[in-house]
Length: 414
Image 1 (cartoon, rainbow, N blue to C red):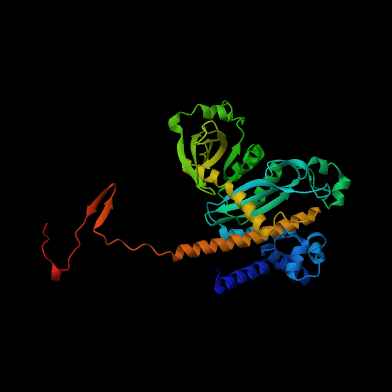
Image 2: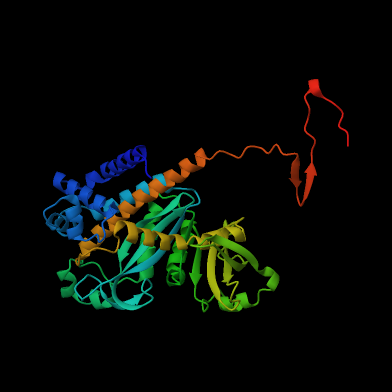
């Protein structure tokens, strides 16, 4: 049961979030619609579409929300910047990790911006869907989505009339998912978010421009790559290099907690010879190769390229690699609790506005969770010291006689 005091704290925090972003909406009526919309996204509404949210807010119909998403004048990118500032304040940590990944939004028809039959990792197959590329921020305090871009296939960017019909800007050309991720990384590095590492799956790890951008910025990365990834000359493919690792090079390490148990794998890592050093300068980072092997299936591998500060350990790299799952957890929470995927907008501006407002709602929940965890840790009372005469020392036990008070001291007899 949630206490009255906690409900009051939650309400006060939500009001502070609304006050933070109110300046992005120039008119009072838009501010109230935004507040009602976000409250609806946070509410236990079964299907968070326009009609259901309007009904929950007490509106006569969804027209007001449709205007908020599609027709009203307000800066959605400025709101995204507010989300990043809020996440930095609530979840920021010097060892923070930025994670890039994409997720699919199943759709019917062909009118929604960016929709076509394409591979959806969410569905695990080719489906009629939109693909959103996202950045999430993860730290020991929690995780939250902090940026988003809608992927537009060439079937869209090559058709000016089709783009114009759904409000896609004329200067929005084709960009790969990796290029979209690189743009979001650059924005995140310029934001208040404290970022020590970047990670992502194979779709992003093989983008050499993105890796180079991070190296130039002095940011470490642990990025998954396909087994065919070529290493710098004179090295071969990464799978060939890992195949030469002796068995003693493998370490069994947990990379974090899974849904049911810790994610335990065998890991092997090796530093690569230092390159790209000019005029005798001392490098502050070094490249590595890293591999993960399944404990149950020793022929199942995952491969990573790494750029890490000097002094980094294998355990550090494993923890960064394991943090990639945080974005999957953020997707699930934002979809289940904040209606991230329950929109009914077809236009390009509407997609960005709904997604960003859902990100704001999810960031609020992440901040509450972080505060609750911090409060719980502070209220935890350490166990009282044991007064038992039986005391464990390693694998053996010792019996200690109690110390008598001076007034009652008597010799012990065995």
